[in-house]
Length: 351
Image (cartoon, rainbow, N blue to C red; front, side, top):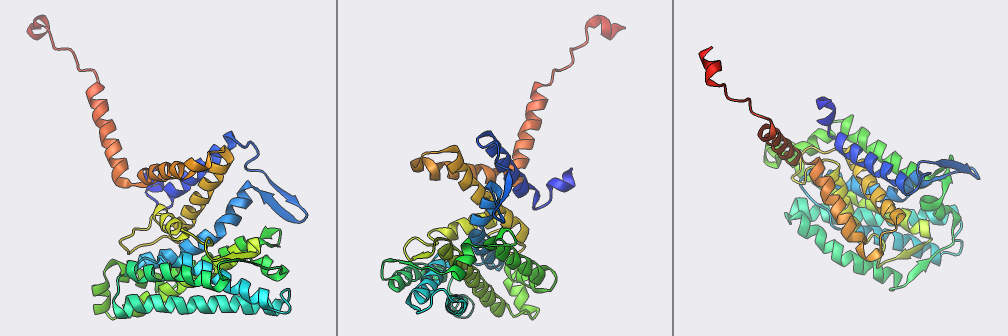
């Protein structure tokens, strides 16, 4: 049992299971999954579906944090990519054609590639602190997204584009399949090759990594590009799901949820070792918590406060130091409450 609890994935999985089971008290058919019209429906499917964009953003954030950095610009990248794609489709003479949608996706991903390169160069080459370098794009990028949309919500009508975030394939939401594919590819690249160890070495000790010949600057720049591409895919999902682009609200504060998902998954903000599986579980915890809030019917004005308390409790439960202190206090309590043996009488001593 100790070996199981020491696993990095145990506590995130346990917290997720508790949240899911708790919903049964309010929704008896919470675990029910039904097939209707060739599509799967249910609360569990909704959690995976609406959590797919956060999973993608958190995935890129994991590799950035593994190198000892941070990327605050992912929310702006989400907004920019969705705005560019919807703008191109809305201005096209044939918005429903596959070629138009592929071009829009290419524009969004290409722009995200440029944004990721800019972040990577600022951090790796120029030497700007990651939080400052990405904060620049976080602020400026949100303004760029509003300039692209001209401060309006761009609506589109395109079935191929709707497929990315709101369509179904093989009975499952396409967003789930796409995010699963990206997660699988990332796991294979980081765990079946030396890339994962190189990233961990750069985040754990960048000076030693440079001295042994690892091209740390190139790896650091690479993870920021990957983070931007993941955020662009998430932006395409978000905008296509609602068939609209909102430069002001799309991806707003998703960077904070992504950082929280990475931390809940067991990855240290100091860099070094990372857990992709833990990040996925962390993102699902956040999405399940949001679903639970709406299921319980918590008033909107207290939703964020409720989520904050739950997140604090989850972080404390996952903290080894906090669990060790609780165990030590419980042990002291047992020792103080244990009855002491009675002192021997004079007759017993003489005998």
